[in-house]
Amino acid sequence: MKPSVLIIVNRLVISGQSPDTLSLAWYLREDFDITILYGKKEPDEEDALYLLEKYPGLNVKKIDHLQRSFSVSTDLKAFIALFRFIKAARPNLVHTHGSKSGLLGRLAAKLAGVKAIVHTYHGHFFHSYYGKFTSRLVILVEKMLAKITTVCIVLSKSQFNEIVFKYKIVNEQKARLIPLGFNALQFSGTGVHASESFWQQYCLLPPGKIVVAIIGRIVPVKNHLKFLEAAELLLQTNDHLIFLIVGDGYLRKKLEAFLQQKNRRFQNLSYKEGVHFIFAGWQKNIDDILSAVDIVALSSLNEGTPMCLLEAQFAGKPVVAIDTGGVCDTMMDNETGFLCKTKDAHEMAEKINSLVHNSDLRKTMGEKGKQFVAAQFSKEKEIENIYNLYTSYTN
Image (cartoon, rainbow, N blue to C red):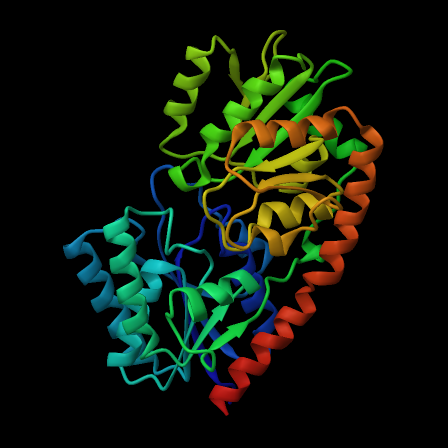
């Protein structure tokens, strides 16, 4: 009889932890009896249920009251639902991912008598996500939760240093560094035909255009306005640039207002003469998107392990990112792209500009990026590490 593992995630949406978590469960399904519980998406998020087709045969169940936003009554209902499910299923191990599922799931697992509780931190949310008071409260709660957690998984060296040494969430013995694994087999690769397919669908760009993309939820921590400020600086001397905004979120109207204030035209999934900004919304085939761009930027105030940077580099695209959280662990500065040491739009614009005017540098950095991701973010190694961890607590 296979050991039973219950995995709890906040929600199954495009971007974030969903692709990695589901692919891991799929690869481990022969060795463990795995069930995945997931919650309700936010209105500005896009379901990633297509992943269940990509990874068939997974046992998943939705917990309707489990949601990202805070609500005492709804969260209590989610906790009760989780507790009842865990009590009935009696798993050998519960593995939670993310903040809300990590809070409710770990408490429910402890109350239900589960002996092995594992939690993965997917982001550096001890700063920049919330105000100072809320951040202090989050740190205090995480320290309490760490006491009932068997193992806390982090995805990068900087994240390890944060939870162990800087914020002292957990001691070194309980922390495990297991980097994300990039699933190259599920990433079909990019090329000219994919690029043409994307732009033919949304109106071909004229020759000579260079596309700079940003990928992610349009929320405060992603700091899209800084990206737009850098874009505005670049457009003062580079009229041939197109800025592609992939993703969505409740701050999109604020971005549109900024562009209107600057008298910049923007379109939804189309191009017209004089347009420099295209909102692409959520896209399932990220490799097709990446084939259609030249540079990928990241302006976040905080990050764990940004999958968009791994995907961009594997697709052979140079990256420019603000040096925050685990970003420095996901690229090689001056080799696969550029790290911005400040959050200043001028620095980001300067580093993007150096790539805009040097096609050879874009190609060289892109080639190094693909090699770097393939070597440092092995899916096979991630699967092996999680298998060994699960086995050590379920035998």
